Length: 288
Length: 314
Image (cartoon, rainbow over all chains, first blue to last red; front, side, top):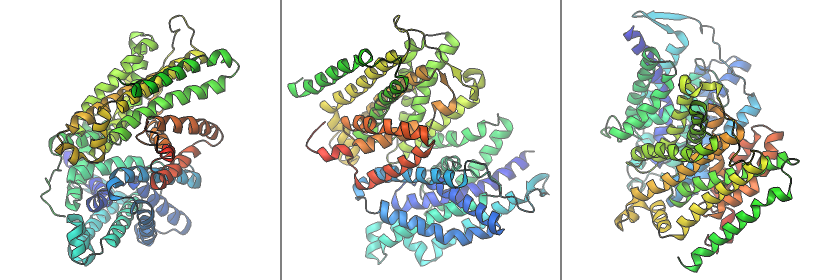
């Protein structure tokens, strides 16, 4: 019983971690809280839904097809709306601008796709496998594995490639990075694009296991913030740890407490970590 | 208090007294829709002013005003439901209870700087909504609570009473903002909001001023919630903790002019009537409008309408 709860918690936690990585990267490099992160997840879900509904492309493939579009979207938003704000006012103004963008996206989605709940039903949606007495649905299993692969891939990208190192250098010290020949402006634009892509990909991967509706983003954004704070802002490893903790905590709460306690867990963790260990569980020890 | 400080307060007071005679000129019985809009404008002035004291004066962006409004609304509704208190009597308590919630959130969130406060207030709004939904034996859950306001001091409740009460509450909010703006405290707020490091290095206890701003703001937002639930006569989690209560004050303050006393008032008086008419024709389209206007103002006109008259200090 307890093992099956924990296994399910870890599986959902891996997806949560992927949700949070886009947010943590943007925050780490630019110190910007991206309030439309949830709406980027929502758009990713709808993109996967439309491609599946119209052309029968599996969400697990279509996330790669739509990634360039979301990269361009994120870059344009950063380039034209956030980058021109003077640095002194950026922290507050960017909060308000991204909040405005989130409303534009959520309401537009409602006009385009209506408020109906949509689902992506794959051929194997009903199938389950049994692993250590735990029933695991195939879509949940595939989504979790894919999240894990993407998190590892993103970790390698950040630690091994030039681009990833440039992003981390910018995160540590803008001026020094720029002296070392990193084009900080371009890196910032690209990082924002990457953050939006990661959110949209998480949305696409989530689409077979969650309902899709225009205001779904707000559910995810709080979870993502909690994970980012849990793991330490800007840390990819932290997001992975934070995601799994949140997933397991939610699974335990919904089993042993009332089901409605599940959604409150995120806030309890959030406020608890602010109260006792604001630098995050890993305590800022990790560089990545 | 010098002459400079007294003049705006006198003007405010005269405006309130003059406007209070409105029900004698325009009959509330035959213009129900108009008085409904008047009420919404007054209440929104109070809420936007409350947000502005925290977000504009002290530079601490709150994404949780929906939570404050909801707590205030539920305080009035539950005191009425469980203890049969008159909703009017419970109104000040709505502010006090909300203030208590703010004490808790402030003590946690202001341990840290930067964006943690905005995120904590967002968390507060969501967690209080979930509690209101989940704690059925106390809050009736999603069923909601009915509030039936009796007469206030033998004045029967109706359009005229709501108008005058909301008008004076809005006036109270503006008075709070004015008193802060005219006092030395406003400079401390400004210093903390603009550059906290510099403020700290000058010996300003930045946490103290952030807390003061939060307390005043949450008190006013709680009152807003209380008066809303008296007026609607019904409160449930989705109406009490509506995200609009978070977004609308930000939007109106940004348009009117963040950090000024008159900004939120001008923003509200100009835009809420338009928004109400818009809302009755295209439901939820106002959110799209808010989003676009918010982005355009924050990006291109960050000082809002008040910024166009830069010389005026208030």
